[in-house]
Length: 128
Image 1: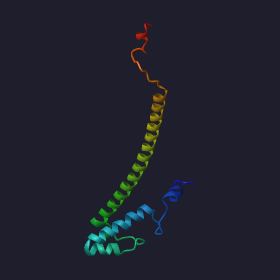
Image 2: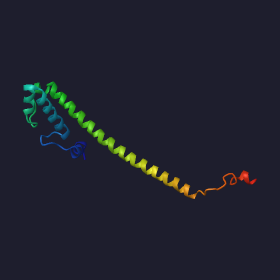
Image 3: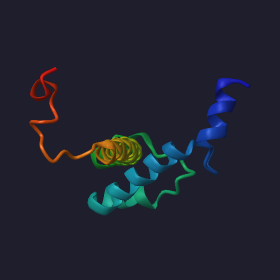
Image 4: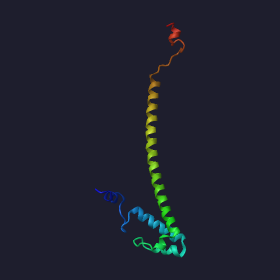
């Protein structure tokens, strides 16, 4: 299996022929340009994602800024999900470790015999 086939299998391709992440970035960039960009931005957002933008449209600052924001949102979301998963797994292990330590502590407390005369129970007090 080639690297390209492997990437296609896991990343997938959009109907436009782009990878899903690229299509998401493109769509988000066009939405930001259309939302904030005035007439020029509206023209960018009105263009279907299947069609390639003109060179002048691709140089639009808001369109490029929207693409950067799309990547930032994607990466931030992925990192939060990853951090949350690792944190939960770590907390679960820590809870299991604490529970085991508490059980061992409870067993030691059960096995200890309380003495009525603590000084008499020491070997020094018995004269040994």
